[in-house]
Length: 422
Image 1 (tube, rainbow, N blue to C red):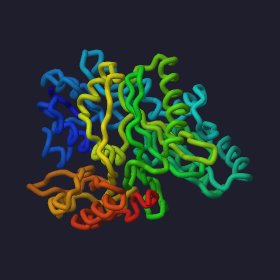
Image 2 (tube, one colour; image 1 turned 60 degrees about the vertical axis):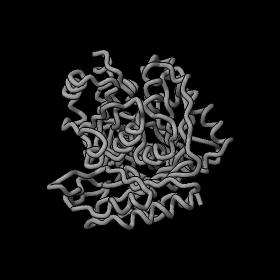
Image 3 (tube, one colour; image 1 turned 90 degrees about the vertical axis):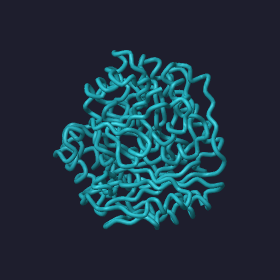
Image 4 (cartoon, rainbow, N blue to C red; image 1 turned 180 degrees about the horizontal axis):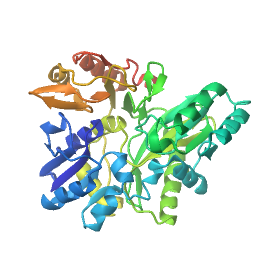
């Protein structure tokens, strides 16, 4: 079959890489793709939000299955439009995508269906928000301010003082995040260890993938600004058998009950960002697509045919699927551009990718492009170097030996990815 992957990041490269291993895949297209996807798919220069052009391409090129990588086209309704034209597409429709597209929509859904989450309140005005944090910060040491809409992973601000909370509220409501920050959600700060639970659902069945852990902060020891993710690993030992049982029952099953009762169209992936608190698992956020960089590690550990599983999801017979995993662990280390998650320069030549892959790692491209035959930087998160091995120690050792081979002006990475697993 002909398969179209929509997106241009590390997630989409990882999906193309895994799809290419399937006997069901004849031709892979990636729109718009990057320098890495160009090696395994045909890159199509169509922006992820140019949905009508994507539709025309799918119709004119006998695309049998479209897999949508990023959240923005899902929130813009790509699934609705492809479905209307009788095309098989992996992802939730526009209304369901609000589970990621609006923090307030998502929080209301969680509260309605008794999914454990942080206490919160939503605000449109600065004065009311200031009053709320003043009251909460008399007893809490930290508080979380979230832009309601999509902000490329940067719209979550953690304040450790009243002044910081007020600054964060002002940052959101005064336009730093554009439309996304016109409404904000303020919630209690949850303490514990984070885990990422990705699960496939066709609306009737829900199957969790191997649990992973993302590293959101830019600096070692989980310090500094939040990013789209500086690395990930799986399986995450914090999610033991008892905890997984709790997550399946209190999060995934209640999520499934909720989408059924709301009559939501959902044939795709649900990502639950979980905080493991002293009171059990609580949902920090829902995402409606594969996590990036979690999927790089998860795909590396997956033994089963991804295309077969996704096709069963889209066709509503996920109950017939079973997923096999390789033994051991997988670790992804993100190499980023100097200045990320703030402003950064682009266009630097990257060297050493082949040498890194000779070490047994896979180098997934996130922010790269081709120029005069060279691979150059074109984003904040540039590469996701990923290794699988028989245990976490070996995987960590292998991935960092590979990372050391790759160079460009201003490259940086965290040196403590997967440290919590040790």
